[in-house]
Image (tube, rainbow, N blue to C red; front, side, top):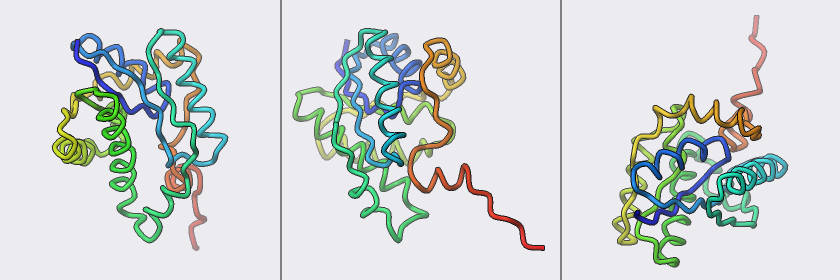
Length: 181
């Protein structure tokens, strides 16, 4: 088994991702670092959901307890159209640094399960960081398990969110401007 530090955004995305990675010969340690998630209550609900899943499956979990929304906003303000790239880099760089610090040879992310995320950009950023930190980036395509992850989340009674997490995605999901006549 290869040790893997797995950036984990939430419990539902961790369900299938960890199951599949274990089948592929990885020993994942989940790592919760998500400064993009807004509001703070949402950040907490996702963290609690992940803790519940980790306890249920007896999987290791590392938590970054600091809520670093300001750092995320400072990087994305005036760059709304490129915000996802900034967000991927911010979270994956912290994961790569933590993997290096812990002596874990590989890192990855549960973001690769979502059909709504930019897989190519995530893999590009992950590859660049792997080269920079002399690590391996696990770029397995987890998207075929997306529906199963949703099913497992329901079975495990995990909180399931309705948007990516950032203030911009929350707006895009829920705010529908009135059409002018």
